[in-house]
Amino acid sequence: TGAKNVAAVCSEKGISKIVFTSSVAVYGFAGPGVGEDGVINPFNEYGKTKYEAEQVLEKWRSESDARSLIIVRPTVIFGEGNRGNVFNLLNQIAGGLFVMIGGGRNKKSMAYVGNVAAFLKNCAETDVQHGVYNYVDGPDFSMNELVSKVRKDLKGKDGTGLRLPYWLGLL
Image (cartoon, rainbow, N blue to C red; front, side, top):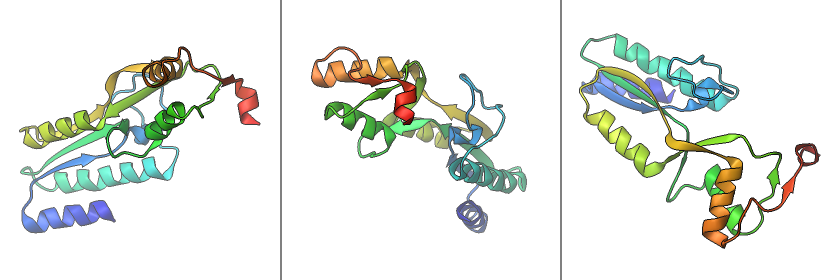
């Protein structure tokens, strides 16, 4: 009910602009380069509820021509103070605990928290009435490239380190 509460308070207080941080999780397992017009197909509750919140806010916006809504769908965000998946990956590499499973050719899209914050600030300051934007910092690295770069920078070592075949990793 969070989005409903936000919309209600904005209506009550005369707030006419919302910048909502959603997620690329609304697309589910989408292929590379999916745009803002991509098929909505979340595979988990996180993506599903983000999209439901978008719909609540779209309804709020549609109730008045004076209202503005910008939806930003970032990819995985990393940076200072974040203890999510990217932090865990970097921490495992730094501690020598990381094991690559599979070929490592899959690409990883990421966004640095400071860049996302700057983009959200620009969204708040723009005169655009309505927009939906996917956010990712490029370039996307394959897991081989990402792990190799991090190992080189943090440990002075080349390559990805220990690797297991995908089938063995599943066991």
